[in-house]
Amino acid sequence: ASTTATRNTSPRKVQFEPPAMLAAACARKALVCIAVLPLFGGGLHKLLLSGIRWADGKTLFTYMAMLPSKYIPWPALHRLVEAHPAILASSSLLLEVSMPLAVVSHTARLLLIPSAILFHIGIEISFGAQFNHHAFIYLLCWQ
Image 1: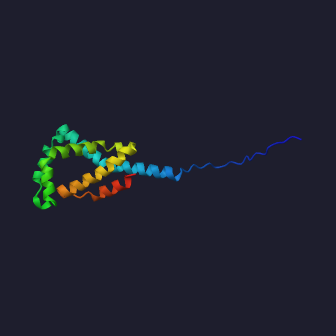
Image 2: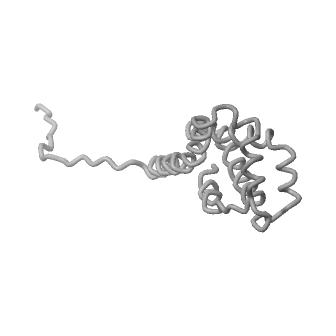
Image 3: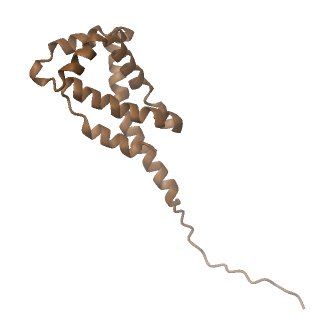
């Protein structure tokens, strides 16, 4: 007696559904890409317009000097920023141009995202400009 295996020759539909974790990881990566663009764009814009001279703090000092006092929520911090514009300008420029690293490196993301949140809080305290929506989006990316 010969044994023959029976084959099912009916066509089967093969569907590929990505695992939930992969879909979540892709969504998070897309969110990080979207979140880092405004900061990176700002840093790139500064470099294209004024080059590395932005880091000397003169431009930042000029902007701060033009700000009417009624828009300065914390005058003491504003005076501190005016006293050290080069440190703040160069560190903000470094943060802005290094933000794309948050897309490709988990370690960089753990450092850059909280720095970006503090950056926006500092802008709000120093200049009165609100970027709370950016800080909220950064919180979603910080993992």
